[in-house]
Amino acid sequence: MSLRLEWNNEQNEYAISDELAAKLHQLLRLAGEAENVTDGEVALTFVDDAEIHRLNKEYRGIDKPTDVLSFAMQEMGEDEIEIVFDEDDFVSEDELEQVRALDGEPAQTGEDEEDEESYEEPLGDIIISVPRAIAQSEDYGHSVERELGFLFVHGFLHLIGYDHQDEEEEKVMFAKQEQILQKAGLIR
Image (cartoon, rainbow, N blue to C red; front, side, top):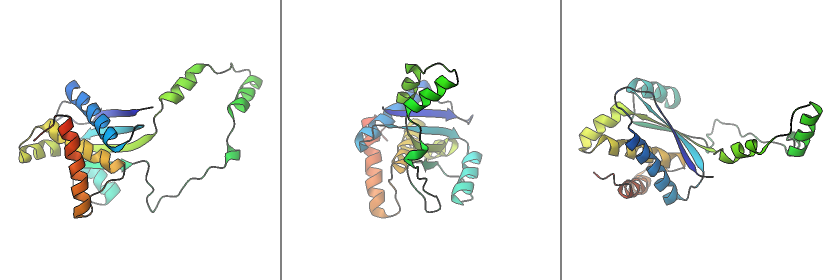
């Protein structure tokens, strides 16, 4: 098991280089180490302002673009229902093999076990507006790569439960972000 990053580029304004992709993988590893998160998958998507505006309006009710959105898979919102499974609803591997044998299907090989072992529980999705990142990098006087890294780490910390609703939470979260970025060599 490990932390895994899956990313997708759905915008045309900025090319996501192999070097940047490697840096994002490094940031995920460093952030995971800093927060003792060793397993899970993070889905990262780079979008334009129109798409992040649409998502921000649809999911947060805010009718304007933003720089980053995070959708955690591990938290329960107040409007969500908890799904509870009864152990009697599950079939054991032995029972499944017996059913397959009755149906004339071949026994399963170790390949499915490998697939199960490589599966990582999703931590959530991070959506970054590349045009916002470019504008903010110019405003702050640092590289686009640093801004994208900052937004990625910011989104990751949200996925694992950090927030910045008050001044104290903001200090803690932003200090953690800065430590991780420093370790990765993404300085201002």
